[in-house]
Amino acid sequence: MQKSISINAACAADVEEIKSLLVELELPTAGVDEHWKTFVVARDGARMIACGGSEAYSNAALLRSIAVLPEYQGGGLGRRLVRELIDRLASRGIREFYLLTETAEAYFKKRGFKRIDRDEAHPQVLASREFQDACPKSAVCMRLMMLG
Image (cartoon, rainbow, N blue to C red; front, side, top):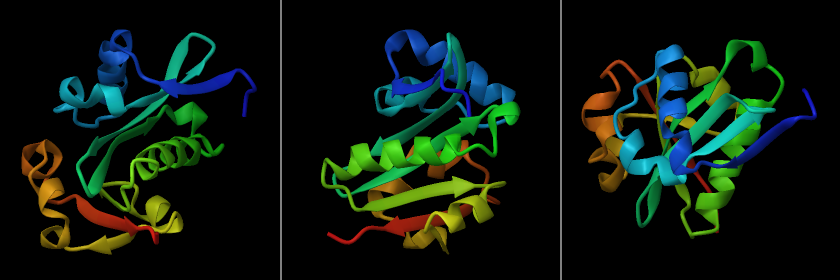
């Protein structure tokens, strides 16, 4: 992995670039405008190469929009993004993490997430845009519960 890759909190100026990256990787952009303050972005120099976000609620959070350009996949960047998001949310006392995925079930399973039925998700997460209409019903729901 290149040493020039940095991961930082997203700023307002990053929103359009985040949405462009998500569109390029065929991920939904619904809700990005409302939740961009919870996003982190990875850059190789000035180029945005990855992003990840969350929708945080009082007791649970939905990880969303974890996207890494194909030429940067396989080097641990996705893992760094997920860890950064979880650490930020855990510092706020959140211990339940959810996500929906159509393509990365095996990846998240390796990171401790377990497949669950959608109706097992926290009610606040169930009410999110991702669960309501942004992600297809075919997406797999996964949960990570942290002790503490």
